[in-house]
Every structure is written in C-alpha cells, then in structure tokens.
Amino acid sequence: MIQFAEVFPDEQIVFFHRKLKRLIAIELKIGDFKPEYKGQMELYLRWLDKHERSPGEESPIGLILCAGQKNERIELLELDRSGIHVAEYLTSLPSKELLREKLHNAIKHARQRLESESAGDYER
Image 1 (tube, rainbow, N blue to C red):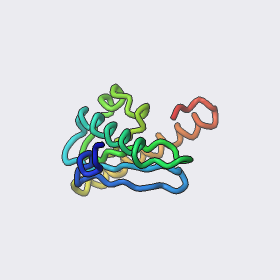
Image 2 (image 1 turned 120 degrees about the horizontal axis):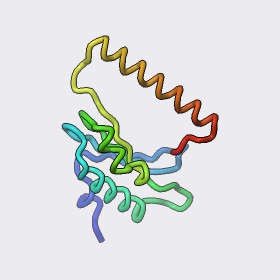
Image 3 (image 1 turned 90 degrees about the horizontal axis):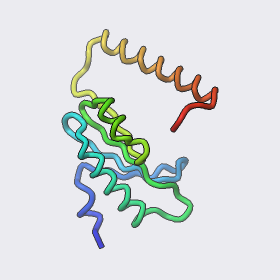
Image 4 (image 1 turned 90 degrees about the vertical axis):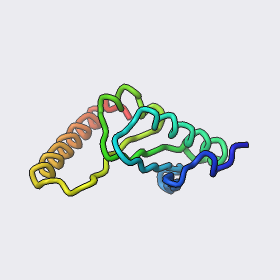
C-alpha cells in the first residue's frame, strides 16, 4: 500500500470541512500553474478518497495555489470535473488601480453568477 508520506509532499495541506463534509487538499506552488499539477492533485485526491474518506463524506476536492494562472489552460484541462480548483496568490502588493480593476471584475463575475444561478442555468 502506498503510504501518506509517499503521496503528499511537504507543501501539501489537508483539511476537513465540516459543513461540506469532505476533505480538502491544498497545495502551494511557486510560480505559474503548470498542467502537470492536475495529475499530481488527482493522485492526492484519489488517495484521500480510497484511504481517508469515511462513510457519509463527500469526495475530496483540491485547491492549487499558484503565483500565476492562465485561465484558458485551466479551462481546457477541465479541472472542475476532477474536483480541482486553481487560485492565484499575490507575490507583491499591486497598485491601487490594479486592485480596483480586480475588485470590479470580481463583483461583475459574482453578479453574473448570481443571475445565472437564479435563472437555473449555472453549472458547478
């Protein structure tokens, strides 16, 4: 049997979310997102599902934190279907203009998502 230490590197963190009733694997990567990260996370999630998931829990999900991400690459990999999500972290404080722009885009995206959910056509 493959042991936990063989599968999970030191930069991997695993949490249990009580309300979601599932394990969440979080991995911090230095640099931009790379396609091979999907395969690594799928291995982690399958191991957790097989060896750590208890009856009544949902399948584990993964979060990959990167310094940069290319949305088209992430969309083509269909990470959501694998229960994997990618988020970008900041390595330095951006300008006020960039923060304003990101906030505006986040609000716009949230409104679109709410409208889609209320119309019943939002896919998870």
